[in-house]
Image (tube, rainbow, N blue to C red; front, side, top):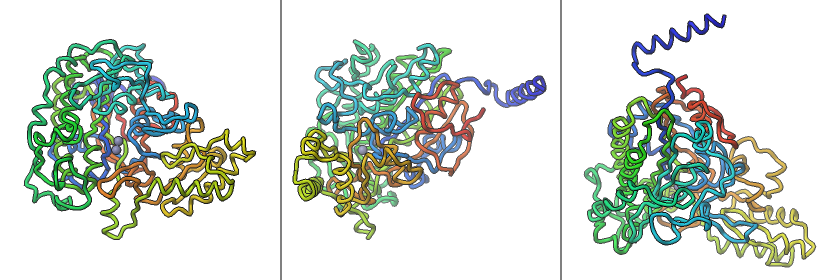
Length: 546
Ligand code: ZN
Ligand code: ZN
């Protein structure tokens, strides 16, 4: 029986070898993870006719696209998204509960990757004092290192520090991010190394950024053809400083002085091109994909997020950014073909969250949408504690739609923490923009299996989260009335593309519901390695060509 199976398998392999000279099950030499910051799933379909054959369409046609993949936790922010993609689990396990949060032990607000134990490498200042120390579980890249006895290279790059650091976990060879301002340098932290490799210094000395910035951002095509977007001049978009209206053309050379000089590159499409330039330099400089071990490059495109925040969904600027990103991706894929070899790499492309249509735009269409004043909300909850507990000193911090109670104060007044928390959860519902509220105790004692309460639970970390957790109405932002944001558990924030492509991946598409946490176990399975140690996602069998 065993023999027969073996014979059958070998004939299948032999048969496929007739059509394809490359061995079917050989491991990829390089895995490339691509995260596009703030990319909604519908940017694939909305602009489909406008994309070329070599970018998004190439991997859609020859790879496997998950059309109904979602984030399965709250809050949908950048640090959390990148971490969940690469750890295969949610904040309840991996510990990265937001970009910034209130540390109830230190009693101060912290940033996800700050770590003063390390210093900046490649420049002066504190921008490199970073590490992944707040990440509690391993990433797929850590597991790759463990599986290969620490051989093979794993490197993360992004304009944003958190998007470079968190994907590649604790054992990364390097993470590089961009220091703008007057600096124009790709830098790292002494967590990874004591000195920049010579190819990074060379890249920094090349100063390609000036060429990208001493120019004008005009639309790629005739602006009249941007029919998927609002008219260019409208009241729903923010401006670059120094521009009277949010319109094309944008004279970057003239505007860079008022917009942070080199930092301006973060918020224009050239930031994505610059990221591809750097990704190519990494692959060449580190000779990725050239040994018998599998290397891993995590690339995150941040400019899409800065642009998305400023102009919102359905803006000419956003459409133009994606049309240009499509060209950058084509260029990058062609480079991978030449440098690493077609069939030698596997890649996946996804986003760290999506975004809501500009709420004031939705309001203009009579769709319910809201702006919430955090100051009014704070006053409101202080009135609650005053009314029921005769004190305005019970609340330590309010952030990320969570209330952190002052446990020492509550105890000193002889009050019961659970009673205070439950009263707040019951009463905050009377605030117009709050839609649901629960106590941490409820999340510890109840299991929500699906829907938005399950997302809230997946985002709740017993060690780090607050005492009362809230969900605002759909399409609620706390920012100004122009531009947009993200962070909720609603589908406009959770629905993102996931496309797998290359070695070990089938062609196809699926409209089955998948979670973002399924990516890491799927890549782990493809590589035949142990999944990250906190994995709660599952292997997406239908994408794997095994
Ligand atoms: Zn983001
Ligand atoms: Zn953002």
